Amino acid sequence: MSAGNSAEDSRAVYPEAQETDSVHDPAQSWNALTIGAYTKLNDIRDPTMSGYEPVAPRNGLSPFSTTSNEWEDRWPIKPELVLEGGNLAKDANGFQTVSDDLSLLSTYYDPQRAHFYPFCMTSAATAQAAWMAAQIHVRYPEFWPETVRGLMVHSANWTDTLKAQFCDSENKASYKHLLRTCGYGVPSLEKALFSASNRLTMISQAEIQPFDKKDGGGYRTLDMHLYELPWPKDVLQAMPPHADVKIRVTLSYFIEPSPGEVGWKDRYRYASHGLRFDLNSPTETRDQFKRRINQAARDEENGHPGTNSPSGHWVLGQARDKGSIHSDIWKGSAAELAESNLIAISPLVGWWRERPHKGKWNRKTRYALIISIETPETEVDIYTPVSVQLQAPVSIGISI
Image (cartoon, rainbow, N blue to C red; front, side):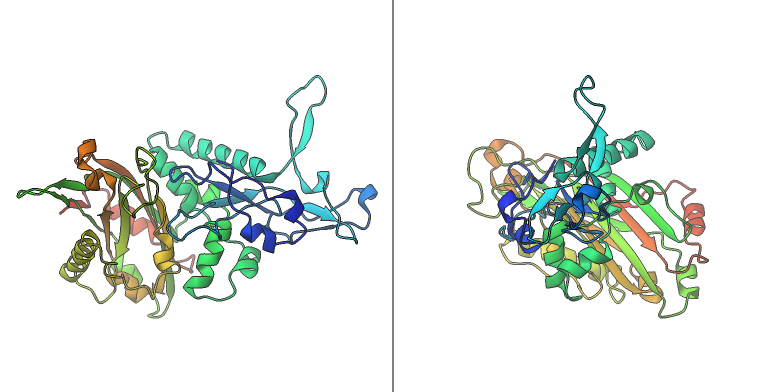
């Protein structure tokens, strides 16, 4: 779904105007993949536009894009992705105009009048995202929509220019600003479809029942899924002790919006449920990790903020926990990763549980969990040992 375009009268103040121009209705939808725009187009060759220069730098935020910086923090991250949306040209007096050189080329709707036509803004970016989703679906027809959506976000990265524009430090507040401006960045179809020998991607499509009745009356949170990841520990431990590795984790699911017009009267009213992921720290045993997740679930049930996960390794931390798709990058040494091999998927309270008269308290929900591990050295093969290990059919999802 298109994020919508920035107001024409505010584009002259770039990029400040784009940071405060909100994503348009109905692109605030939790379940939609909302698309903003960045641009690589900055070369003006049209001789009639001599003296004009591009408004946005190459690989920067498109002047047409909108953001969710002005939204309350509890709302989803929007847009989730940015794709090519074109650029604007400006003259010495600051006058801005659309240029064919700074637009994409598309077919014209009336072939009797013209075959081709320049195409730009967030509609053009959204068309490319739809094409990418179709390519993934054709390649992997067994993937759920939750998985296709998750793979697109999982494959995304911020360009250096986007980071320079909207992330002035490595702290989580700066990354939150970057996230609210251009989502998780620019998706890569190649990354979504293929894995290299030094980059391994694992996908789980699973179903979970978030809630159930208590024996003595009332309702409770029910299932947690615990995954034991088949990291090649011998390969990781053989790497230099301080060699850096990355894990990318993406969790994608769909919520059921609340019936009626109750809106945001409290935090449990709009989404039917929520899901979260967490990874054990290198010093946590399996039992300690399970106790921490269970304690966080109890705290959340009782209205407390919950137990925060160790956030030193995560790029985004709690900023990722908005909406119904969550993605983050864990950074650490190979030695630390060898001991961090447990991922928990746990529910958050929603109206399915808090409004039991609607008859949804025992519903199940699907999710896609996507996990990638990447090493910097291309000569380190992490793909082969894991693929050999997984030749035997082993279930790694455990309902607790």
